[in-house]
Image 1: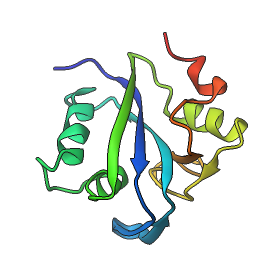
Image 2: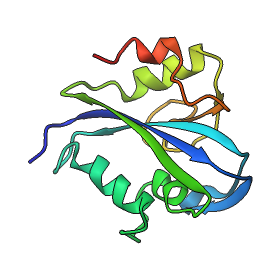
Image 3: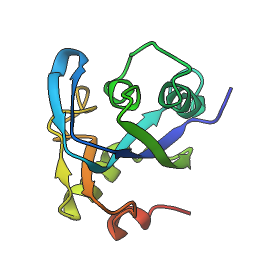
Image 4: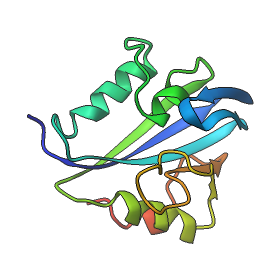
Length: 137
């Protein structure tokens, strides 16, 4: 079993697209970069990140989490992954994106907590805000 932990996926949306995201319904995404924060403390731990990579590469078609719908779109590319082994930072990182004035995609990935979102628009930058980068070891 892989270690548990939290992670950030940086996803580039190459052009504007509307995607059906499970129970959230249709969501419009502008072209640009997005950062998603997640955690993997259940069975398999951070092996979940590899599953996300397979979805992004078109090698896995099952959509379980909100991020699967975005990663499975032909208009998106997974650009970067940061993992935080044995650290439960999912909501802390979401708050750090909010502090950096990133724009949330409301309710995305945050159905089991009080966060406004776990997906944040970064605009044209692929760099993580300093408030988030400070957590990277």
